[in-house]
Image (cartoon, rainbow, N blue to C red; front, top):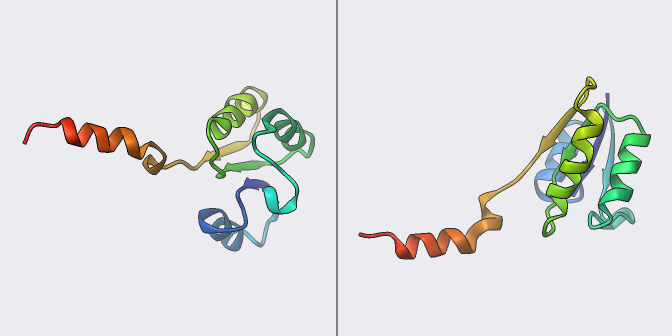
Amino acid sequence: MKIAITGHTRGIGLACVNQLREHDIIGYSRSNGWDISESQKLVEEIADKDYDVFINNAYMDIYQELILNLLFPLWEDKDKCIINIGSYVIDYPPIKKAKRTMAV
């Protein structure tokens, strides 16, 4: 199985790479010259390489969502899988604000 992953050099991304090492897995991160803010370029690369699975792990502003929105239409009718890893941590300020306004 061919797997592409963003943010593969540490944290959850590195753990995924370690768990899936028996597969053909390629990482895309700053450490090997990729920048997820160049979303179109990244999606073209992933579509070109004909991966079976894409793990959308790296977070940076709006780019993780943009990558998902660009790749999904290319893959939606194919036997491929996108795993999008996200966290409420990125939304911490709104959560903190909501807690302050809650009645006790």
